[in-house]
Length: 248
Length: 226
Image (tube, rainbow over the protein chains, first blue to last red):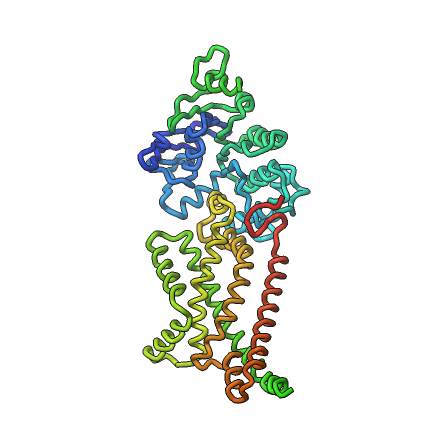
């Protein structure tokens, strides 16, 4: 692993009215790492992810991509940064008027400036990678939740992001569809994709995450490798949370 | 039988008036489409100051009776030394009025899109303008067709009032024939029938367009069909 972090965010804070949503949250990601954000709902996990690619503008904080600070106030630089930091949403957010293949191709054409044929060719490759070649010409409303989320992965991956942000990618899915999406994430992790994921899939976290970041009330309460926070002798807040989920 | 022969005699004139009527209506729809869509985008995505300006515009054009606006437009053209052509003034006044109404059709459509379409586009690195053009507008326009078809039929009927400026539309030609022959009942019934047919044709065409552009599983409510 090389020394320089791919993505570093420092002291992200956000207040809405007099309520603190995020308080000095920092995080650093090295190539191939999968860090997981967990914590009770309302802890600020989603907002933190939104702040990392500036879909929500934090009050304070700085972002460094490959060691260079991102000037998020500069629209052009922000757009370029976002192409390098892909985002997967809990509710997919596919473009409703476009087929699966066009969902993947549109940003290649509009943002990357590729021709229609080039973009479609790349889109076909990305859909094949998530096993959706047969669904390429279907519209979002004709796809199952798991299929929609896989199209969303294809759409994000087509931009060749350095980092993927995953905001509870399986929370809106029927239980029997969770597996197909987790399989995609596992495959990405195996191929060295750098990711931050907010999730409640605790067993999955134990199996593949490099680090757990536990958040509560807008603070990062603790962070560490899964064995340290969830091992048999661990006395962590994370473990308490894990046990409380397990007993439900 | 006298009435019938009067109507038949006046029909060529009334039908050529319908070209003038359609000219006004399509010009107004066109102006309203371009400006209305722009105003809707400003109203949804603009800053507070821009939104307030649009609000004033809409309040003005929705608040004034069209008859008043037509004479106001006439007065303005005279005052500014512009060519006082009734057809031109009618197109501009109805166009600016339709802008106010169409902006609300488009605004409603944009707001009824599923949340997060814009966010997803931004997350892929699209600029706001790109996202609006390639993601928001194609969806919003589809959802606007029923409201737009309504706007067409309202404009068509509103255009009849333009005859007060001397526009040679269906209404003006009918009024002229009626004044000469005193066959009011038959002539205005014929004029009504022409309006009815014009409404029917375009509304049907728009319904066809809506069907053609229909996206499987996607309804005008913006959600999924079950």
